[in-house]
Length: 391
Image 1 (cartoon, rainbow, N blue to C red):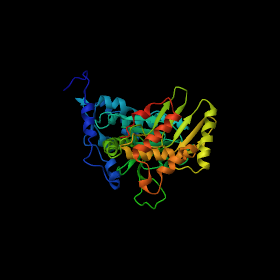
Image 2: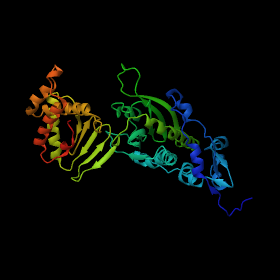
Image 3: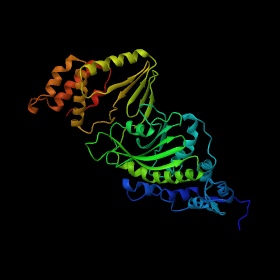
Image 4: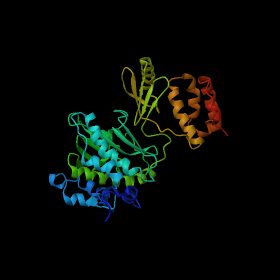
C-alpha cells in the first residue's frame, strides 16, 4: 500500500483529455438535451481527503449522484482539477441581492468550467471571455473562439430580473453564424440557470429573426446541480469547436472594446456604442444621422440611442476585406449611396453607376478610378487608396 505521506499522482490532464473528446458530428437540435446531459466516459478520481468533502449526509448530494462523476482513489487523482474547479463547486462564494454580488458565483461555476475544460481542448486555442461589454450591444457574458461567439449568457439578480430570455434573442439582430444550426446560451436569474439553443427559424414567414429552445435548468443553490452543470458545460466544450467550424471566419472579434488615443471608447457588439470625452462629437454625429434619416438614405446604419457623451449605432457591419473587385464595387456603391445624401457632388457619379442599361454604366476600373479621385480630394493625407488594384 502507498505511504500516507506520499501525495497521489496528479493525472488531471490525462483525465480531462478523455472527458472532452468531441463527437464525430454536431448533435441535432432535437438531441441536444440528451447529449449535453450525457454522463462522463470516465469518472474523476479523487484522493480520500478530497472525496470526503462531498458530505452526502447533509442532503446536498446523494451517494449515487456523487458516484456518477467521481471515484475514490489512493494512488492517483485529479489534484489540479479538484483545486481549480471541484472545490469551488463544493464551497461556492456567497452572494447578496444585486447582480454584481452574483458574479463570483456565476463565474466560479460557469466560466470556470468552460475555461478549465476548454483550455485542454486543442480545438479551442483562442478561448476568450468578456463580461458586461455593453448593456445595449452585448450579452453580459461572452465566450469567443476565433473571434466567433458560440456561447453567451444574460445575467440578472432576482431584484432586477426583467426578461433575460428575451434579451438573448433581442441582442442578435441577424444570423451571422453561417451553416451552424444553432449556438448555445444561458440566462441566469440569481441562482436559477436556464440553458437554451439559439437558432434561425426555418420558416421564413416568422416575424422573429432568432428563435430560442430551452434545454435544461439548474439551481446553483444545490450542490448536486452545481456538479451536474459542470458535466453539462463539459459536454458544451466538446461541441463548441464544431459549431465554430460551421461559422464564417471573422477578421475581428464579434464583441470587442477599443480605446482610441483621444479617449474615445468604442464597444463593438450587435451594435456599436461610442463614448466621447467631448459632447460636441455627439452633437456632430446626431446632425449627420439626422440628415441621413431625413433623406431616407439607404445602406446606412441608424442612430438608435444617444446620451450626453455616447451614441449607439446599429446594425454593425461585417468587417472584412472584399474578396474580389465585384464585392469592392458593391461596397463602394453602398458607401457612395450614403455619401450622396451628404454631398451633391456625387450625384452624377451615383447616377452613372445605377443606369438601367448595364452597357451604359462605367466599367469597374473606371468607376474605381473616379471614386479614388473623389476620396483623394476629401482625404488628401490618406494613401491607402493607392494600394487598391484597378486592373
